[in-house]
Image (cartoon, rainbow, N blue to C red):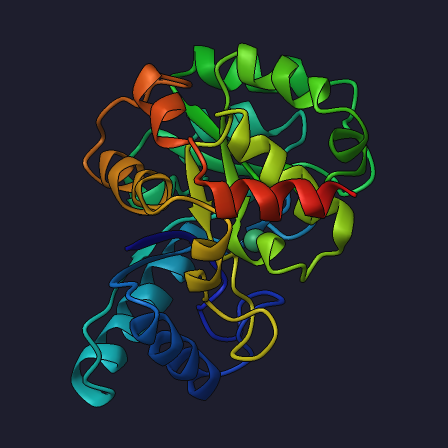
Length: 262
Ligand SMILES: [Fe+2]
């Protein structure tokens, strides 16, 4: 499987504090069947603008260690999780941001936790005019979206893609985030699931428990097929018949979903 959102690079943001933790995280990922990870440290315009060369160098060093010293079969690629602000489209066209896999098109962006700022639609639109394809990270954790899913639908209708966190299904971010993640996937709005791992403990790179809540075919789509398209620069349809079909839950999963709504 391919994990497109991780904070596995050591000592660069609020994720892994050191190499030892990064290796533990890679071991957990390998035990879950993840073989490709994108390192996506936080980039916050005007506040924490990490330099692209630093991310590329740290990714290379971590890969070297994972393969040659830890002997794990995991490849780490560079990327960033960019806090959405009015400066982002210009930063993108200036080449200051790292897209997923450093592939040029798919940009992982995050909203504030509590609100959807009034400039959000304009910024997403401007990014797309410049050739970027924004992927909204964990919208289920945004309070306005959890309250009203139509707020996310508005952004999806503009052409933005959606990534849910596997750990939201575990309940790590609370009941609202869990139910919102379930609804986003059930309504066919998500193209990706990723771990957004920060540690080797509670927020570690795990997803296998989501098999109790989602069909295997859906997980394959969200963690293998669509991420592969990102990796190779191919297009992804926002919502296809294939996506809706694979989103069908079996009886047990439906029961789990509806009980969770009570
Ligand atoms: Fe993140």
